[in-house]
Amino acid sequence: KDNPDHPWDYDYVSINLSLTVENVKNEIEKVWVWSHLSSNTSVIKNWDMYIQNIGLPWDIGRILSNPNIDPSVALSKNPEIFDNNDRDIWERLSWNINLTWDNVNENIDKCWNWDALSENGNVITSFKMMCELAKKYPICMETYSQNPSLCWEDVYNNIMIDWDMEGLSSNESVITFGIIIQHRGFRKDKEWDWYFLSLNKKVSTEKNFFDN
Image (cartoon, rainbow, N blue to C red; front, side, top):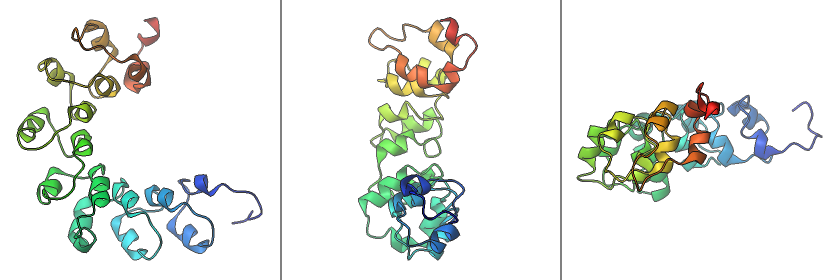
């Protein structure tokens, strides 16, 4: 605002976490990237804030996946937004970290993204729950392997499941460096993915990681 003559990149300004919805409204003529604003947790702090400013050109898909949005509030307060069963709306909602199985089950006929639901640790909260749901619904083991509710005991005690090794290797809830060393040969047809292990903060920051 104080330096309007500078060549600001609004692609990046729009993701700045010091930004507020009032900043945006006061400078509405700027070339905002509304998909970024819709994902920005400093701009959209809750569902009511979105509704109060619904006339702005938000990206509803990004709004619904914003971690500040509570799906229970959105579904109960404004069901009309979800009535047309728009695939993009339900797919985006599937990625929301606050989504629960109750939210899904109450709208089970909608166009949910089961890859996203399988990975969402707030939806599928235990291995036992996953096994029960897999009897009726298309659980994706590739993305479930990244689910933060999963633990090593679940994996080790069910070793013949078709686990996704990229997913397991990146899952900070499953893997420690000690587990990798102890179980180098996970299965003859399954090897740890060292690229994703290297990206796994829990593994790569352990004391013995650089000694191996």
